[in-house]
Image (tube, rainbow, N blue to C red; front, side, top):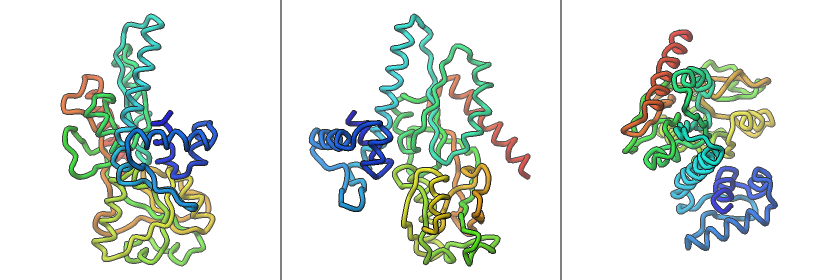
Length: 298
């Protein structure tokens, strides 16, 4: 319960929303986080009456918490299968980060099942940083996430290069632009994803504003593009997302690409340095499907 509470609060940055997500009372979640902090000997969150944020310790431990929970779920699934008499314990856990092109994965999984009918395939939502930790620990077989610097011990293959997109209310003065630069958004309050969910995307966006000599002013974060769009529609600010996260333009909003250096991010397939045959096959299916999708667009 302690790790689940930590991850839920870290992703929601709100104890009430975390409690609702876990179907527990807020005091139960708060107590679980305090017990974990007592065990670790350090604070995981900065708490004020108005906001919750991760400490350096919390930021550092979040990927490990994700990987540990994934390993626990794998243990439980395998245990249930063995208890039911299923001795074919081959499992492929496929992790996917928020904002990645999940439809691409959905197109490839049926083909993978045809090739490996005895393999149990377990999709798992997981931030990119946690995927790297889990791949090193061999608790997942493949991850779909975002390219980030300084990663060792895993292999990354680029699936696609995604443009950053601005979500702008139709009545906004910038809504008639065909493209937007970082400098044009410098004084605007922006809504985007939390750093702890997609640090690679955040770092890339920060680089775009830094190169453009602009100020990146994030006033609110949300863990889904639908939540970002809702805040934009409510007049909170301008949203920033990536092209692959948009199934269709949100009603009442203009979707405008960002232009300039570092305004794209690479979506990657991640595997261990020695991936299984199943993970290798899925990676190749994803690369082929991505290439087909790119040729269709062009």
